Length: 165
Image 1 (cartoon, helix red, strand yellow):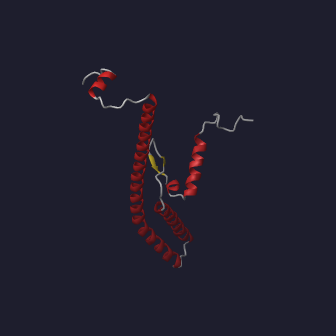
Image 2 (cartoon, rainbow, N blue to C red):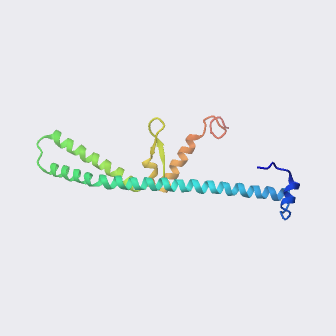
Image 3 (cartoon, rainbow, N blue to C red):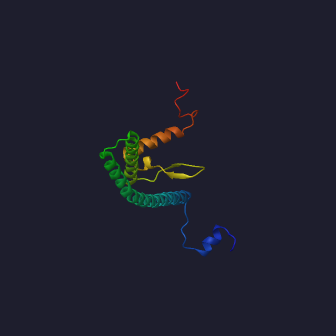
């Protein structure tokens, strides 16, 4: 690789090269910076779409696999309740099973309604999908974002309402 010999040697090698004014050079650099920012944004969006696609595929599979056993459990429990049960503790247990199956059904509905890729901290630096945020309506997603932005401001910053008159 040859060392840079200065502008004159470049002009000798490329006599047709247009000389740029300082203003034109600044404009070209700004244009390149803008293109780099757009490229990074597009790459982040592409990665976000890929993550969401993976989440949707997994959520669909989980819902498909869980729904049939949950329906069977519900039917078995309802048949057991219709039978004359003499033991109240058994009746209570069956009723609790039905409540838990209903809770599982609510979770699978949330999984089926995932529209965004949202995560939350789990254990020791591990992140998991935040089902509530990921399956929220756009209005609720905006509320979650506003709450997390509000929580992220330091308490003694110039943005806090404390200490302002």
